[in-house]
Image 1 (cartoon, rainbow over the protein chains, first blue to last red):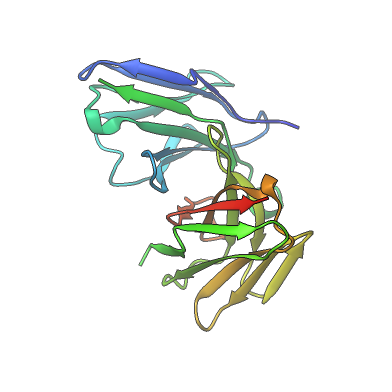
Image 2: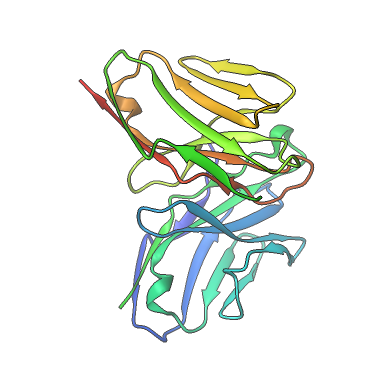
Length: 115
Length: 113
């Protein structure tokens, strides 16, 4: 079964450093998403991306965040200057609205630890 | 108005029992209500979903009951098994677009052998 893959599984960084989280969405999907989950809390939407541009973003997704689809397979989330409160699990998801139900499939996540 | 409220926060059920998790919403634009199951160290995985034009959907041991007038929906897990122990999230989305999923706060379910 096709799946969304994310790398790395765990990223440790120092406060103020830039990090890039990587995702390979399911190959025929057209919509891409990033969500985050702070430990013990609910999953929160960050941003959706379609046709090489952001289609929707939350208030969490400020100027420190950016997304990119640098080639035909990868989808990345960059945090320019990490803060302690950015420590969370970050989930990538993808979907194809042409398919019934437009199900979003989630990757296993990247745990980001900011020290 | 974008929130989905979920209860209980945690739930312990004996093996073979019925697990019930409840959710409520306010936004009448929500038109698609999925439930996600999450195991430790994994991403959320779609378990079952319903649209509000039906009052119930059943897939195996999992049933969603939907009350559109009350803006409430619930997940029932029949004959609960230890392998069902996970965190369950109710969620909502505007079906007409590939929009974001709004998640509930999650319920940590433990099934006792």
